[in-house]
Length: 199
Figure (tube, rainbow, N blue to C red):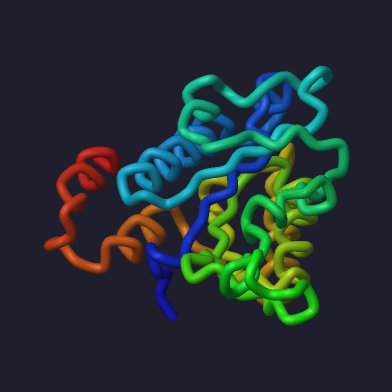
C-alpha cells in the first residue's frame, strides 16, 4: 500500500522553541519537518501544526508556522482531544437544498474531498506525537508516522513510541518515502522541485 497524495494531510506536532533544544538530533528532526511541509505545499497537501502550551514551551519556528494552514494551540498531550479531528474531517453537509427539505429528511453526506490519510510527525515522539497518532487511529484515520521527522529527549523513548505505533496499526515511513510515494513517478510536475528540496 502506497501513500496517495490526493487523500493525504500532514500534521506537524510541537516543534517548539523551548522544547527542541532537549530533543536528540533536533536539527535533523526539524529539517525533515520543514522539508515535509515544503513538499506538502508544493503538492497541495494540507499542512496543520500543533503547539503544546506555547506560553510555556514557545511557538513552532516561524518558517514552519508559515507553511501550516492553521496551528492548534493545545493543553492535552493528544491534539485530537483539543479538536484536531474536527480540522482534519470537516463536518458533513446535508444533501439537497437545506431549505427545501424538512430537517428529519435531510441526510448527511460525507465530503467528496475528504482526506483520511494523516501523515504525522513531531515531538516528543513518545508523548504528544504518540497520543495524537493513537487517537487518530481510534478516529479511523489511516496514520503514517514519519520517523526521521520525530524526536524525543532519548532514543529509547522515541523507538518505544515507534514500536507501539506500529503495533497499533500506524505505518512507519521516512520523509523521502513520503515524497516519492506522493509523486509516484519522475514524470510528476513537481518532481524537479521536490528533488531540489531533498538534495
